[in-house]
Amino acid sequence: MNDYNINIGIDVAKNHLDVCILPSGKTKRFKNNELGILSLIEFIGDKEQIERIILEPTGGYEELVLELLSEKNYKISLVNAAQIRAFARANGILAKTDKIDAKVLADYGTKIPSRLYVPLSLPLKQLRKYVQRRRQLLHMIVEEKNRLKKERDGEMIILIKETLEYLNKQKDILEQRIIEKIETDEQLKSIKEVLVSMKGIGCVTAAVLICEVPELGKLSHNQIAKLIGVAPLNRESGMMRGKSKIYGGRGYVRDSLYLAALPAIRFEPILRDFYLRLKNNGKPGKLAVIAVVHKMITILNARLRDFYA
Image (cartoon, rainbow, N blue to C red; front, side, top):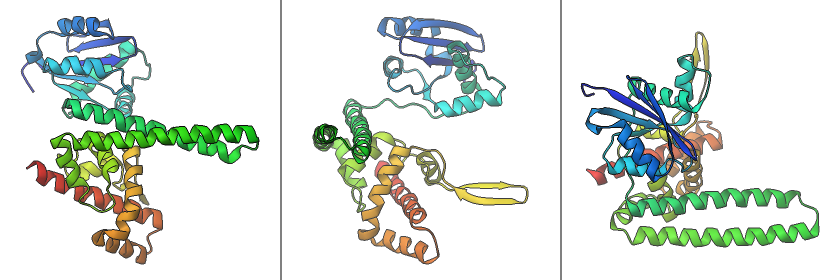
């Protein structure tokens, strides 16, 4: 930390940004547009005096302020909203307003170490948009399939099937664009080659890992496992010894790896032997697959760590 130890919280909403500077306690609201953010930058002042600026991901409303702050080389951290709320409750803060949230974010930066935000390259930003849109389409496809199962009206069945056909075409187009985007960028292509070296990991799953787990290869295997939510967490209190369970993490990544684990178990000898050993020891099928996912991400993390070295 520097001598000043100034931490800034920015609560992001669709139309405005609430800012709190600690330890001075200064607060102010700005519009969430380019002119407003430039005024915000003028308000917070010299980046050399600022230890960290803390924001929460807000589904895209934070993108412009992240971009403009990154261009000015401010030190920024994106912190999961659940962590911020847990921190607020631990400090006895139950009320929730934009102004209070900004102060909680700044206080979090003062007391809790957080990873530095690294801006994405332009090709990676575009790839992430493709991956995120594909995720949205998959969600819509599941919803339409569920509706189709329950529908009895013939006309509605036809309309739902037409919608499904359109959504699947859109998904196919996006997957093709994902592949093309990776193949036209040497850095992305090189990372993809490392990931698909494991059987079961295809180009689209590799894209999910590249976009949704940029920390892969840069953290320890335990940190990566917790990040994705495949690290068993102990549940013990006094004499009680509960079963270890996975919890939290990046569910979309975990689901993608779960699907990738099924062919990996068939065709990757190390993973097949590991899975069979767990099954022979009485581990239930789904838990054994999750254990395989844990092992997969550990191996991929090590391979990418060597790639970056």
